[in-house]
Image (cartoon, rainbow, N blue to C red; front, side, top):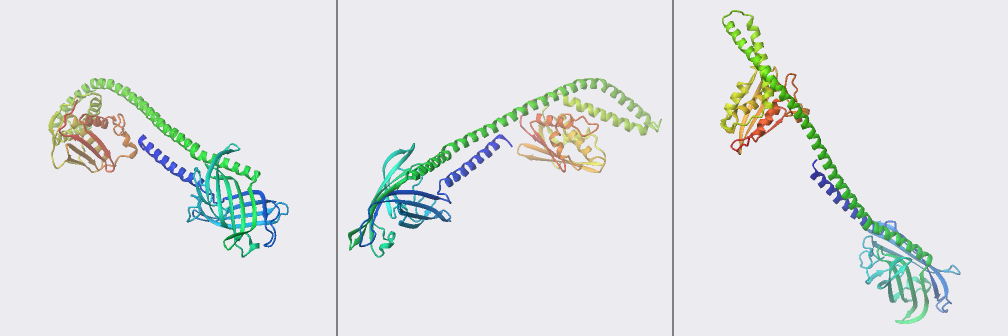
Length: 505
């Protein structure tokens, strides 16, 4: 896998991670599925004991608010909001009310309404339309001022309401129309929308024939210091969580992503450098070995060719005696001697052909003449047939060197077939300005583990091979500006040679 692919995969993973992160952050900023709010309020109140009685003396009241999720339907929460007020001195319940709201987790608004149930994150200095549980009516909260509570930056919003029907909150005055006027103030932490303080003053009265009647209740309340400290602490914790989600976590993801990307690039560069070093060392070892082969070759050519020539002349003389029927036993040994000479000559020529760099003698030649020479100078057993291309083609090439290359391929094909009856099929086609030549044999095929080493100098699977034949073929083909490949099974060597391009020596 190359570096570009790895970087692309890394970027794709980064995009997926960012998408998952955004979904996670969005979920964390919604109203929790197990949302519960508890807050306490205290103040003074005056209330009418009976329709014919008098307004009581002021007394201290303690009021609790509990909002809790009772059901979840997708993104909609069913919320119960319970408000209960008691006389602090007598512990008598003076006010109690329960309401049910359906709230969107994301927008924090009432279902099918633009009225807020609670403030959203990132509160702005503007008016907000609310249906707040402590107000029992739709109310507009107007931005008033910015201030600080216990090192926490907060916004104050105020509201005024008039002529709100609160008859249901006074069952002891059943049948009477009771209205309420009042004002309120809410303090909210703007980043998270958390309410940390609430105060309210109210004036409740009976309405007769559209006119204000007797006073039912008159009082006021505010969040207790204890409850405010808890709400401020919750707001600070939630604000830090938002800061972590919006600033710290993205920064960490970016840093980790950059470090990972740099690590991949550095690893690939180190891997590439290591490969270059190993390749250079391997190439140096090959050159040293081939240099040694070159020195040995000079000695071989001097020490072996002359004796071989002498043996060959001697054999020719013996053959003349055989023709004269002087010694019948020689018919048995002469083929063995000739085969040994041919084998030694072939190996010497392979080594010499590999270590000697010969310039190309480029001429316009026919493919059939090259193949003819290759077959002529290659030992092909009688049980192996060669099928030549049906058409002939011409190309600019070095006839001698290509015939040597083709001969090496034919020799390998014959060795692959072995002692069985077999066929070597040669095909040739034109593709644009190239000549494509295929050599297919009916042999046993090439093991997959040997594919990468076939054209490596000195690699051979033969007990008497030099390991230079296919390496020499590769060099000759490349010198002609062509390419060679192999596949199996069946084994097919494919040579692609330019027909007309100018070849540089």
